[in-house]
Length: 597
Image (cartoon, one colour):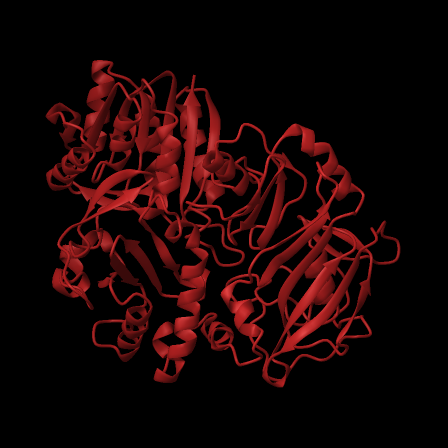
């Protein structure tokens, strides 16, 4: 993954922050895959001075001090408001004035939100300068240049909502008819406000916040000379400079809460626009010259404005997952979708997966050739492709059933595991094709045992080992029921320093039905008996119906009942960059890592 560098010298590092990545670790302490952590790793930095941040969904110019000697000067510039900050935003409708100043104090509204200060509030001064650069047809949107005189949290978002022109894609302040978050006002109060257009484009329904930090200017901390840095506009904002219709905006509005299967042939340009927008947000993968990772999600359903589908890249093979039961082979919208994907990626094959409600019961619920056809929907057939993830090689079979061989949402978990496995004995339960075991084995584990009920996937795991110049030991690939083997390990007194649990949400083994929502606590308690004192237990589930709080309580409660004291090392979810979540959603993947006493 590559963070784009705009400028670097002995004192400064200036980047073009990708949208979708947090600047810092979040409130749950999720480090390692924020901009700061990635940049330190990319440039092998021991020091990085941080003086401002951009919201997760905001792209653009971000500056850091590269050494302590430059840090004080940069701090003075930001604290003394001697930094010019210029943004571009695509907003709903149009202001009544071509330009102006929004001088409206802000106050906290709770839960990290801000609002226009009301009488009795201890409001903080907030001043924003704006100018309309371009208007869309019939005032459907405006591209606005913004300059910050002050730097309050969410200042631009609250101010633009206040004048009746919220930023498109703003799930916090773009709520139609209620621009004043935390107040009783129902109408914009700014004298430059205008009524909403009769045919508005998507505001909160658009999948991404269309705000970009375009320029920073300040005195260089070492030389004192003025310097200025600009980040190129994202494609959609650049397209808005023409003033032409933006079909992706209208299509996103129509698809919010609707089905992709309702599209018409005329929706092709809007469909292509949303796909291209999603692909552009994955540029940190595609534009990384090291090709450390060539498998990632390109489209993540409603999180990218395209509900009912996901699109995964595995090297030169694309896997289209259709969750909408209407999108079956032969449906005209599926044909339209394949055509647009083929235009964007003409040299890549496209495989289709038409997912039944109970994917684990594939053989019983649907004919395999109908649900997961072996041959691609477009392009040449690739029985096998080899991809890279974080530098390791994996064998992928894109036409082989519903699972091509690697769960992409676990990429960051596997990277974290690399830092835990050194000199450890590892037990990888529900191993599938052995990805966790491979990461452990290549990062210094003294032994990594892969345990799964399927002999075929364990043979596949051995092939992954060989791809990475490892000689698999048959004793480290165990076929059998995980519950039976955990009981055996406990009976023998055999323990491991790192145990990984990544079970399916539902399964049936020996006529026994297992459900993560009901039975995960029992599994965690059983597995804890095979973890050494001071060892680590990694618990994972992708069951969307199990809330994060409930999963955490289920696992920790089971450990309490089993008499195992613990320390929570981290609680993680799916990757931010390629698995964006719809506004208000907490995400489906839950990975709780604990050290047991």
